[in-house]
Amino acid sequence: MTKAQAATASFVSQPAIRAPMVVWGIAIGLLQVATPLLFWWLDSATVYALGLIVIAAIYVGFAVADGRPKVIAVECSVTFAFVVVAAAAITGSPWLLVAGMAGHGLKDLWQHRSHFVANTRWWPPFCMVVDWVVAAFIVGEIAAGMNFG
Image (cartoon, rainbow, N blue to C red):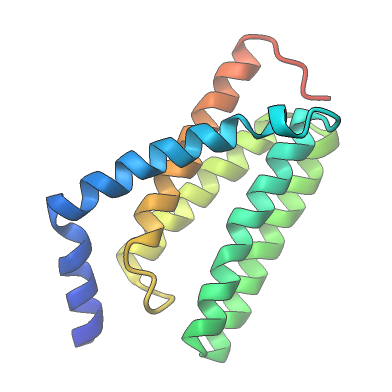
């Protein structure tokens, strides 16, 4: 682990730093859950799928800022995988949305632990909370019988 990675790990592990990330992650997650209301003319599955694509693509920006070709290639590939899941979820099972959001949360957790993309600091734990809040609400919507199509 480099000095920068150790400093980042120390910064993010402090409870005073983690609490706001969790609170803001929950708040933004709840706002994202409400996005189908803003785009009422689209199916909920389409809106959630677009959200998944945007969330996944943010790491491409981080990778470009990192500048290492390997990191850019990996993050573009991972983002493409989430695009495929999101596209399949538009006409397929809404459980694909749950898998995509929960899976991206796991990717965030891995990023937080590995620091694969440099200088992301607080983003992975924040994004992980957002992803898992949205995934949990979609599970609730499925259980409540909501129509995604």
